[in-house]
Length: 309
Length: 177
Image (tube, each protein chain N blue to C red):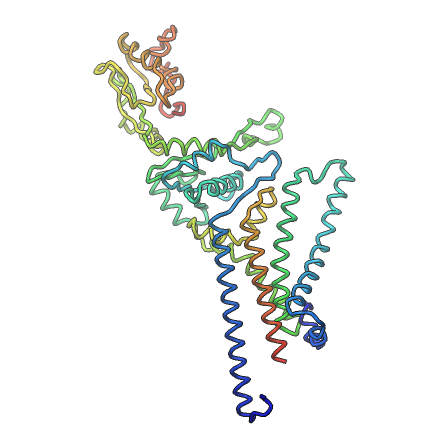
């Protein structure tokens, strides 16, 4: 049929046919692209991971999975490590697993202070920490907590032979990042800030004094609130107290105050660790039947040497 | 590189298309041939493990999960990169140009995910998107024995897309001549 048409008409028919084929190919390609994009979007949102490593060493513990699953507010983790930090791959890998297990509620940001100076300075101003620190910042709804690189590793002091060979730094023998990060997260999720009371009224230094500025800053950035506690005015240690401490008392504790402390030690409050908080207190020594060291120098609780709350 | 370009240069594509096979079958069989060659290239790496085992007396593939998942990812990446090779070959008669196109495309896919790192973009959402198609991050996971469904979907879907495009290019060139 086409052969019987004049050349002009044949050219027109061929042109129309070619146009139809081109449109057909374009539509096919477009549909294929859309399908590929949709499949990838679904895969990006819904995925599965399996750990086939030896001893399933990258799998998160059931406790961590539960914490991540039950999170109501999003958590932002900022890895503020210099590139020379030995545990960077471990921390990155661990937090990636947190991200995958949290259903998009756990977000990680990696900041190298030497490469991304402006962001590093912004973070240092916001969270108040030093330039040389290797820390992981956990932020939930404006409340933050720091996990130091040192808290995530198990170290071993070099023996004499190693010191002779020139190895003076402690050697990293294990990684306990999951334990450190999950416990820090649990404290943040818990909502209630940790409140530490400092026993006063016995010549202890003022909490606001410049000598204790660094110590106060350290507590605040760990999301710990501090408050003075005058046992003279009250018979009981406040309900919200997670741990009472004292700093260098000048005078002896009265019997009645020791009784108050004894009651506190006998109570079972969630999250309170009296053994850690009060055990080195002269009052506690008296409670346990030991003579309390009354000299200011004798108190082992100097500023900055507190056990973890 | 010579998969299609040599056929165009020698003019043997016409002979091939006269055989009772569809264009789909031509493209897929060419692709399977390339994949077979790719797998053969990886075979000597198994000899390294065997040599290690023979020399030391210890099992080289002790962490079998990590060992197998690494080879699985290499296979998946091979599917995608070989399909790019076929596509580039279908675009031109010159195998050098085909090689240049395919290397450029593959390098783009390998290095593009490093863009946030180079540009110091630390936003988690952007990092997450780029890590979705980052071969380096896929290898990081699979070499540890962590198998994820996302690289499977990414490489298989992209392979099918590139093979589809190769078919379209082949048909275009066939009808053009």
